Amino acid sequence: MANFEIVMPQMGEGLIEATLTKWLKQEGDAIAEDDALVEVATDKVDTEIPSPVSGTLVKKLFAEGDVVPIGKAIALVEMKSERASTPVVAVTAQPAETAQPVLPVQDYSGGTRFYSPLVKSIAKQEHVSMKELSNIPGTGKDDRVTKEDILNWVKTRKSADRPVPLPAQTIVNAVGDEIVEMDRIRQLISSHMSKSWETSPHVNSFMEVDMTRIANWRSKNKDSFEKRENIKLTFTPVIIESIAKAVRDVPQVNVSIDGTRIICHKNINIGMAVSLPNNGLIVPVIKNADQKSLTGMVRSITDLADRARKNKLIPDEISGGTISLTNLGSFGLLAGTPIINQPQTAIVAVGVIKKRPVVLETPDGDTIAIRHMMILSVAHDHRVIDGVLAGQFLDRMRFYLENYDVTQSI
Image (cartoon, rainbow, N blue to C red):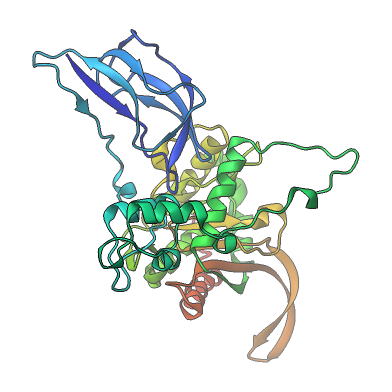
C-alpha cells in the first residue's frame, strides 16, 4: 500500500491560506477518485477538495476550523498498489493562469550584499522589507546576515517600519455602541487590501466620457435582447469590451511585477468586482475577454455574477486576472479610487451615467446639449504605469465608448 498526500490547492490570486470548514469523509472511509473529501473557504470562494485517487482515508492532518497554508498536506489516502509501500507526495495541478506569481514578491537581490535562501525566506515570511534587511547587522562571514541575525531583528525591530496600533484608550465606546467582531471574509479582505496598499504606490487618473451613443443604443435594444436571451442588457459588457480593446492598444497596462522583472501578459483576462449579499466582495475573471462577441460577453458576465452571489464559483474562475473593473455607478457614485487587486497593476472604475448639460463644439460654434456623461478612472501602480501611460489607456477607452458602433445588432 502507498500513502497519497492530499494538499491544500491554490484557491485564487493573493491567497496563502484557506480555512478547513467541514470534513466530508472520515478516517477509515473508502474513497473513490474525485470524491469530495473536505469543504474549505477563503475570502474569495468556498469550495470542495476532491481526491485525485481512490483508496482509504487513513489520516486527517487538520481539524475543522483550522487555517491551512496553500500547498500543505491535509490528509493521507492509502492506495491499493502491487508495489511496495512508499510515500507518494501529490502536487495539485494548477491552471496555466496561476503559474504566474500570485503574491507581491519582494526583491532581495539588489546591492552587493549576499543573502542566503534561508534568510530571504524568513524575510518574506516576516514581511521584512529590502530596506530593513539591508540595515540588519550581520554576524556571519563578511558581515553576512545569519538566520539568528534576522530572527533577532524580527523580535526587536523598532515599530517605525511597521504600522503602529492605536492605543486601546483612544477608542471610546459610548452607551449603545455595538461591538461586532469581523467575520472571516472581512478579515481576509482587510488583509488583502492593506497588503496591496503597502505594495503598490497607487496613483489615480480620471477622464470624462460621453456615453450618449451607447445609452441610446442600449435603450433601443434592451427590451428585445432581454426577451430573446432572458438577460438584462447593462452597460457593463460594453465597458469591459472597451477595456479589452484599449489593452490591445496599450498593452503596457496588462502587466504584473515580480521583483525587478515586469511580466507582460499575453492574455487579456478582466476581473469584475461583484458585491456579495454578506457585504463581501469577489472578483470573477472573464478569460480572453478580447476574443468574445458582445453577446458572449453579456452571457459570461451574467453567469459569473449570478454564480458568485450564490457561492458557486470554482477557483479557476477567480484566478488569472490581468486587469480589473469595478462599477461604482451601480451604487450611484460619481467616481472612486479603488485599490489594485494584486498582483495586477491597474483597476478601472466607472461612475454613474448621468444626464448633464455639456458644451459641445460644432462647425457652427459652441452649443449646450443634454448628454449622458460618465467619469472613467484607473488606479495604477506607479512603479510600472506612469501618468502618460494611464492617460493613453483611458483615452483609448474613451475613444471606443464615444465612437461605439450603434448600427450593430445584438
